[in-house]
Length: 232
Image 1: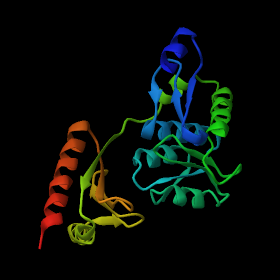
Image 2 (image 1 turned 90 degrees about the vertical axis):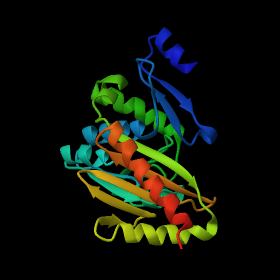
Image 3 (image 1 turned 45 degrees about the vertical axis):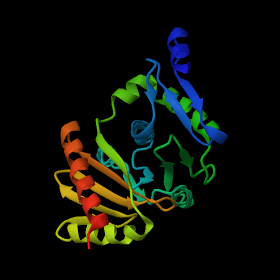
């Protein structure tokens, strides 16, 4: 595997190119696979260290630890819908340095408004060289995060009802309606109720301050959505 090769060759990093070369999976010099939201935080950390004040676009479903990273360098996080199209559109704004998704995709708006794994590989090596740090050091410097997801089957005809109940549940709480209903529960906790646009599912994402509290939060919103689906 690439992980084994990185360790046996004492390489600086490894790259697994995704389908169509649109995204990459990073392997750090310790042989760890860096993907998903950990990769998003790693990219954001590198951008903010290299360009304090930069603006980074991420989906509404991404961890709020990104905002905490941005605050440290007086940078900015812009939230988008979760679709590829939304991130492509965000990249048309040249004030945005990079768009990140949760599948290892990066869009550098100064290059082109599309995901490009080959360009991302070059920019990753450039960032490591300029920061004079190993990829492992950069990964270790990003904050811990505790997000959880669930994909609940939901008939097409019940999706509207689920969203109405979600809005009712959120009525005394701060909400974000960028995509689906994101409910800020206080103390950094949040839940996102997002109907799948193409399949009979509702996608749930939550974040809290620990593994247990994230698990508990996901259990709570899963139970509620299951009730909402069949409510009168």
